[in-house]
Length: 280
Image (cartoon, rainbow, N blue to C red; front, side, top):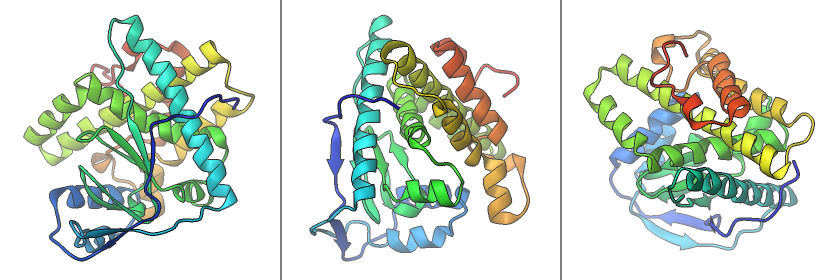
């Protein structure tokens, strides 16, 4: 990838540590369920969540050379999503509100609850912020077999896709619908939500390539590989040894690849209507 400027919307909390104890909040429980999706024991998150509301202590943090490279890439990708979505929103008469991206190490406090790095990158609609522990990229490469700078960029673009859903009012509607639904129905709504975020990530890639020529040979393949690597079916097979489609919350590998490609090939918001699609 040939990226340009770095974003000014980066908040570095990698030296923050937590002391003290408190109750387990609803946000922590939700994040624990997300961790279970990634094949992580949710009790790890809940135990850490007992520290919620504890004292935050700022300690010196020395990043490695690899982390410095990832930090720069993340900042550049975020900047490019700002350019892409700013342009897309402007063309339809809207104003794009740029999200913040929080770097953390080990654990972080968000408006959605207290989270350990084990939950992976996430977007919190309550504070319009993306959160990532850069060590996730090591896991993406070693555990999921998805390497390359565009694979890392796809992760950020997907989370920014959730921010776009929030700005468009989609997140509020899906959360309300899930609250009224059965568990199976709620999972199905979640899948459509996540696949739309994948499609929006594809739209960003389309815009980045058409407007700023940032993509290089092999980049899209890296993104598709990352999308396939974190499909529900593949993750469940790794974690449990079997697959339960009714419990999918993000979509199968095939679905995630398909919707990313749809966004990339069309570059159009209307192509990402996962909620109206008969077949995902």
